[in-house]
Image (cartoon, rainbow, N blue to C red; front, top):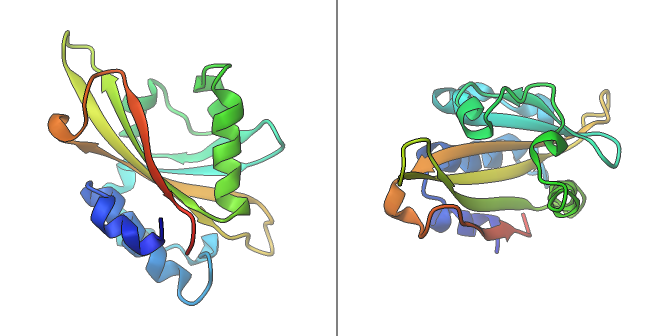
Length: 170
C-alpha cells in the first residue's frame, strides 16, 4: 500500500491528522526529521500520541506517551521498554516490525479490539505509526504513532487484533 492509500483506510480523526501532518513535515524528503515535527499540527490529539526510540537490538523505549495511552497500555509507558508490555512469544515479531519502519522505511496501520473492564464490552483502537529520520546531531531513530478509539462496530469480535496493512512506499 502507498502512503496516499492511508487517506481511504484511516478512520480516526487523530490518526488521520497525524498522517497529514507527517506529510507536511517531510516536505520533499522521504522521511521528516524529528526536529521538523511541529506538534501544534496535532495538538488536539497529543494525549493519544507516542514516540518510540529504537535503541539496541532488544530495546524500543517510549520517549513520549500521551496521557490517554495509560488507559490502553495499563501503565504510563514514558521511559519504559515496549518489551515490558509485550508477551514473550510476540516480542520478536513486534520488535522486527518496529525496526522495519525505520529501515525500509514504511509505516503501519493496525486495528486492535480490546475487552474493557465492563463485562461484555470492548473498545476498538486504530494505530498509525510513521518513521522519523535521524537528526544528524542525535543519530537516534524514532517512530511516531497515534492511537484513535473507533466506534465499537468498526471491527469484529472482542479480543481479536488484525493488521490492516502497512504503507510500504512513501
